[in-house]
Image (cartoon, rainbow, N blue to C red; front, side, top):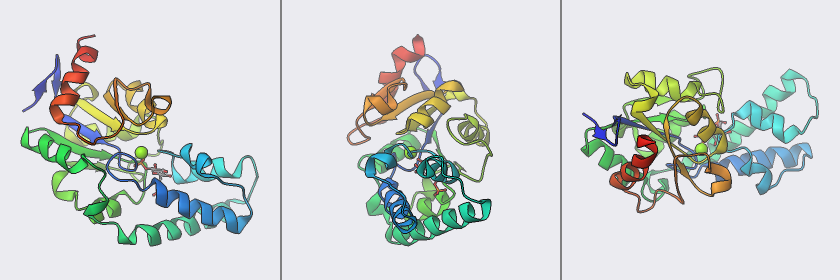
Length: 226
Ligand code: B16
Ligand code: MG
């Protein structure tokens, strides 16, 4: 089953942090705690550039060229992750962003598939705490591929798990790295948030609040027809 917008759309692949839930705040608090302990400057603005970026790459950006032994890098990543896990311990379905659950329900009711394409190695835990697992047909996360966003591998892995090609899937992303990853490999892309961040997407909404499946499909139709 699928929905025709010029070509057949059969699935949605959702980024997690910043799209279905706002774990960016917890990533910020965890990195900030580590940065303070290590005497490294780190602001909320710095945190914005870490959206969709893997844990290791995030630390590299925070270190701003400072060189540390691999053992120390691993220890800092583990410490940050422990803080992050403490913060998400209380996560529940109430932490789904507005419109997320409604859209997932509409997608399922229309006979389309839903998958996750998240750079996070904590994605499965977050998904379970949000109560999303019954609504998902596939999960691709920080363990699924080696090359992280902006490489397209993660979304291609999700599409392959669904048995679909990129042109049959819509990726929903909040980060420039994710939009770039999806566009590069031929997915239709819905960007969420400011255009400076998501302007490369086929269609941009401020968030999923009040956005219905029909809104997305009709907004994508001109992009699909070219
Ligand atoms: P973890 P997404 C990304 O999630 C976050 O946006 C990014 O800030 C984080 O560093 C990355 O996951 C890795 O997360 O440390 O939990 O493995 O936006 O791709 O869902
Ligand atoms: Mg994201």
